[in-house]
Image (cartoon, rainbow, N blue to C red; front, side, top):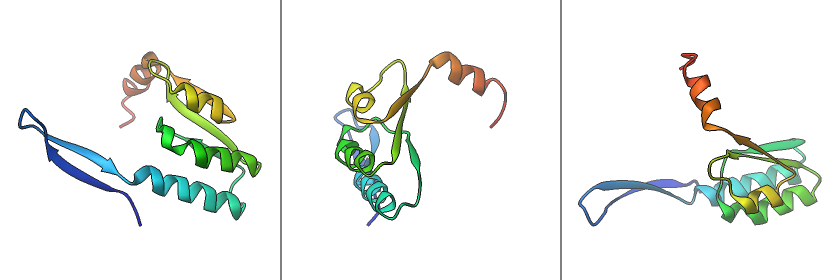
Length: 102
């Protein structure tokens, strides 16, 4: 089972898209792959606190889990639960974007 994107109309009549079930799929994959020793470390580019139980399980299995977030609004729980945190500054994103990589 994978996650999905669902569209809803908000109170102002604007169509808003939200993902559902993606965090569950990521958590299941993390634990399954850690159990099978498919990797030594994982870089998690999500600030979803729902992933913390999976992170704890992965770390307990000896897998390094790195939280990749944004300095402007880091998830403090993720910084404590993961092995290490890398927080990206807005200026770094702008500098990278200006290199016309895309």
